[in-house]
Amino acid sequence: MECLRHQLVVFNDQTGLDLGRSGGSVTFHSTVIARQIEAAGKPRVLLHWVPENIIPDEWVYECQVESRSKQIVPLSKLPRDKLQALHPSSPSVGVRQYRKNRRK
Image (cartoon, rainbow, N blue to C red; front, side):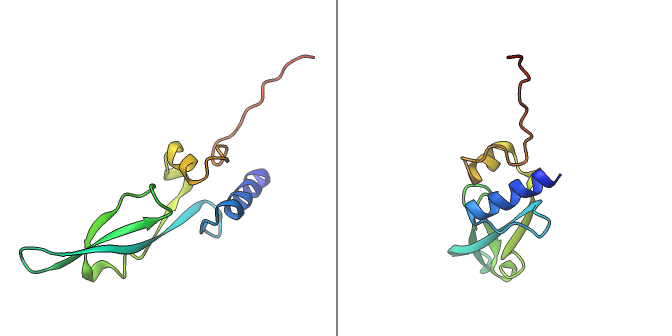
């Protein structure tokens, strides 16, 4: 368990991601990149999530922007390919590596 915690600390230092206190979650921050007004007259905004290419961009009503400014996602809920996209040089994050036992 201590090894996993150490790997998460190293991962956090290398990527600069905002990991939760326990190290088991990633905090995504949103930025507004577009604005539109519906036919009914309600304004909507397009939220872009950082780190990129993990959570898809989404349209929300302007009144929801404050409540959707950040999103905390457990590392266990992210698919492996998304974990590798966070930091490609560290594919072992969240995945236990096994070593073959061979005789010399």
